[in-house]
Length: 110
Image (cartoon, rainbow, N blue to C red; front, side):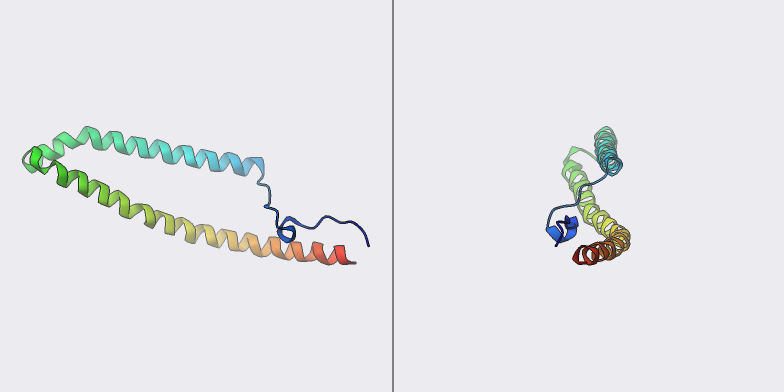
């Protein structure tokens, strides 16, 4: 019997990501942080105007609560959309890689 290294999926070791994929992930994370900070900047700048239009500082808590509630509700929605679109891409990738792993394992047994 020959010593052939098992594929990462069969050995239980996580598969290493390519360098380009890691850069894409970090770029996406930096973009999310930038958009979140811009969102906070815009809201904090517009807050006095919004409260003034509603009739005074006593409505500040309602404005802040509405903003926090809206942002809290959208986070899981975006997560579910990302899971759905990512799962479709990953399922295609997984089926390709698992069939490739099966072929490699079959070759290793020969």
